[in-house]
Length: 347
Ligand code: HEC
Image (cartoon, rainbow, N blue to C red; front, side, top):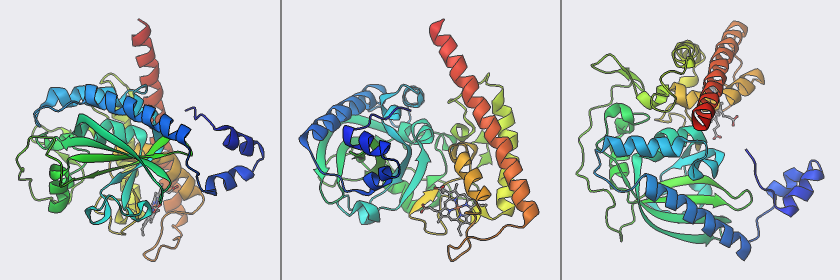
């Protein structure tokens, strides 16, 4: 991925470790940046409104078309997201709270565009502001939630907490936070603006009681949620899909033995401020390089007080072997996909 460096940053990057200091240095607003952000916002909201317009909340065809468009590697949304983005609700519903107080889940940008962004429909209304206290630009855009998809079309059962599900249903707005130092969207927040009408025409849906399973098999014998197995994201003919499923299952069992799932699951037992999810193949795929790095360097797992906990040597060895096998299949699947897509485009 290419990131256009501003002359100042580029010059400091040449100065070796001074680049780190540049990151720490506070951003100073300038109107040229605002113009760039406004151009980016017009492009992003333009794409979202064209590809994911407001439709009936159970329209599966519209959902599939939206997902395919946003997941494509040349999608303006995907190419303007940071490699990891933060997603969640504002603290206490207050969008004007200090940004660092927002509790969020972090995703690879492929996970976000392939399974989270497509749940939303956009009305094309938006507004750009510079938020001086956080030194970021904020785009506030009208968006509504598709609350009548199949259970397995959501990336995980948000209804594990009744309030979370109704917050999704009630939301009429998404804020996109643009970090001007890198000119990328770094965070997205969904919430309800009391002074604006609903965007999605919906009635509240009664969801089943969560049974503790982040993945399940439906009554047709299909594993769910489908998008987290890359179904509909990668082509059915991708030979790595079946392998990925098998290597993920093996890894998941080992991560359970290493107690990774006592923290890295959506109900956030550890109350992490920047939650990392590992409970499905899709979520784990975008984290796998960091998993390998952290386990190799004994940075993970942590114990209850947040201190690094040493894994028994045989468990660490098995965890690394299973993570490497899964990482190889993730890589294979991505490469097959990009070759295949490239070929079918030039045909
Ligand atoms: C006691 C809770 C806990 C356990 C157990 C735990 N983690 Fe973490 N993990 C965390 C927290 C907290 C963070 C930091 C999130 C943040 O940035 O706020 C984190 C971050 C991570 C990250 C991203 C860090 C980065 O490189 O930026 C990965 C990957 C990860 N954990 C993998 C694992 C794996 C694999 C296991 C099991 C071997 C594990 N964790 C066990 C709490 C835990």
